[in-house]
Every structure is written in structure tokens, then in C-alpha cells.
Image 1 (cartoon, rainbow, N blue to C red):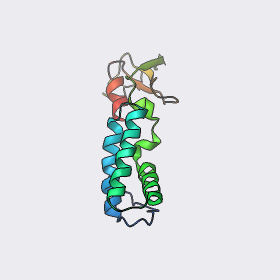
Image 2 (cartoon, helix red, strand yellow):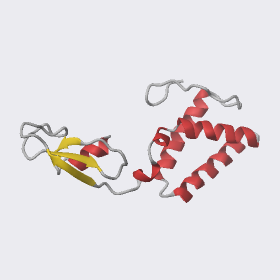
Image 3 (spheres, rainbow, N blue to C red):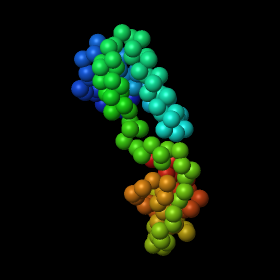
Image 4 (cartoon, rainbow, N blue to C red):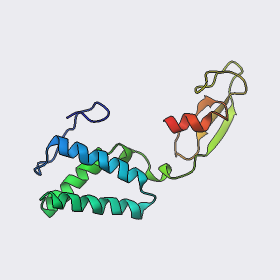
Length: 139
């Protein structure tokens, strides 16, 4: 079953749900978990999904297996969840060489080496300070 990113769902647990049903649940989980403002809200999303799965006739152990698969298959699960809710903060590391161009607008002049300080271990890019927020939002 293709996912939104063109990948195949793999390792679907045998709990009586089709690949299409899992994909629909994953898509909903992505949207709901992204909107969760904190850990308590995210636990509310998980509780909601436990109920949805129970309502589909899954036994308690199948519910936990299915929820674990959904959470593992959620793209945002690989992102540090707390960084999704922090305001963007850039950090200028250094001036870029005079011939450098901005990765966002492809123009030269006053380009800096800038990193997204809201993400631990973020890679720096050559950007204008005014282009940084939009560039890092696309990543």
C-alpha cells in the first residue's frame, strides 16, 4: 500500500486491519499528533486512537500492537517532538565567503552561515538572515 511519500507499508501487524485501514489511521494520527501542543495532548491523541481501535473490534493486546505500528509509521515520530512547538530561532555561525549565494533566494550579498537553533544538531546553511525562517520551515 503506497504511503503519502510513495513508500510501501511494511511489517503490518496481523490484527485484522487492512493496509488501507492502517494508512488512513496513520494519516489521521499524523495530523492529530502534529496539532498536539504538549505531551499531555499527545497522550490524549493516543487515548483517542486506543478507543478507535477498540471500536473496530481489536482486543487490548491488538490495540497496543496496532498503536505501536501507527506511531512507528508516523513521519513526525523521527522528529524531536518538542522542536515542533518551539518558536524558530536562528543562529548566525559566521559570515559566508564573499562569493557565496543564499540557498533560499539564490542571491549574493551579506550571506551568513546560519543554523536553526531550535533543532539540536541542525546543519548550517548559507542564507540571508531574512531568508532563514522560510528556508528552515521548508525542511
